[in-house]
Length: 373
Image (cartoon, rainbow, N blue to C red; front, top):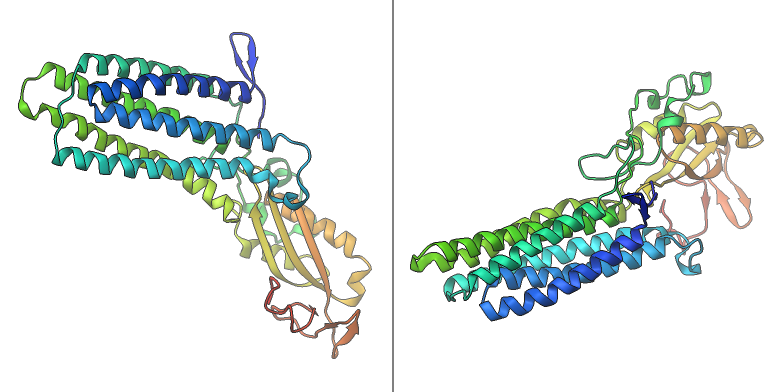
């Protein structure tokens, strides 16, 4: 994932600086919009103002998550999940958008039942135009120029498999492996944390368009029903906000739920690993995305007794295979395939047979708590 600063008119602006600028813009316009909204009784403008407040809180969360993710050290109790701080912030942004859309929708329904006249629609029109301009400037300011990156339809980035998947793995160790047929996308510069911020800004711009339309209808027409334009536009705004939050929630939520890397079939991975010479069987194979650009895998590898001597060479081949799938952090647990009976080893029991169970057990106490219980 590219973290190069944004270049604008010869100046390099970091993500932190961009977020701070957007926070300042959002806070200033929120104060102005909420005052005008209550004075003119415009539901669309009030809804947009509270959306700005939601944006302000979300931007602060995104800024905090960004600062956390840039730290080189991590707390001892968060040594593994610290890298997911930005994802958590992005998911919070998506949830906030959903809650906001439902609130605006309910307010619109109430305004349809009890209609309220909008006063000074010209002032509402001016605020809508100013807000639209500020949001377009913010969107351009936040936009990052990526170089030769690709992204899937969910905006998800992939681990970098291009070099490893295209390297010469035509030796006998990988002769019948399915990763030769795999075509994974390259890394993407799109950051889900920043995507959440951009979605907030773009949804604000759509809100401003709705405010402008409602103000124009009320200002230019004279029908008694013209005041329904305000709650009608507000209801449309709520649906647009809900739609804009969907890709953010699915992308961030999928990674937080530790889904497998996109395009990777664990059955194919298991097939390839079991084709490696010396591997008797593989069970408890798990692969998941730790963050946008990092994938992790664990596996229990069953080998013959004579294979334990050369397990490091075997592990190197396994690593090459998993690298071709875009997985570059691997933990392997070697297990001995006991041909006859079982034997005691450090208080544990090494069981015979293949199957899907571990050869090493810790006893009845932890049987139901381990991953392969």
